[in-house]
Length: 275
Image 1 (spheres, rainbow, N blue to C red):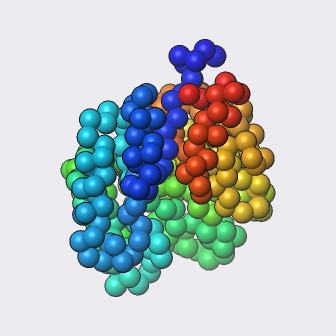
Image 2: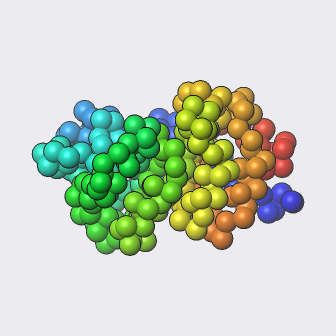
């Protein structure tokens, strides 16, 4: 594989880190995910708008694919309480407001499936359908607005054990405005702790529905967000599975320490996996 065919890797960054990485982002029109729209206090008022406008100004002239991480702290997509669902929907609509300011075309949302769900969805008749119905009650209006706005929501695995459950949920909406996201560290945690398949199996299970990937390394025990190469993920298999996809999902380094972006890129480049 030559350098010209290697996937171009981007990053998930808070707004405060954009000046430091601006030249790196612009040099290859890298994928960017702005990660400053999760603080509940910021989302309750209009503070998010100042953050979005600052990001927009810092990214003037940017030609890469742009997304944000949507609100997620304490927000469950399958809350059974209608009052709670209304709050979750409102927060996600604020995320779409931020996308509008930035002209962002993707927004990450979190999967509702837990480890508990994996072991209990078949415990009583209709539980699996109930989860899907509750997510529709929360997300249907958000998906419709995303369609109108030209934004794709991408649903990230969190505790997911069986990737087919999330695929079934996403497919139930029948909308191109809702696709799949994979977080490699979350998948590796599920592999190590809950006996889920390895990360490359998550990629292959997502197939043509995969639109976004968080790249982070981990040890299969916890959600580490380490620099690539520090953990135990089989990266060559992951990138082989990505190369077999019929589409090119957003690929962003999502690291606990943004200073690890450049060391991660050096590792990927040295192993002939990305540029």
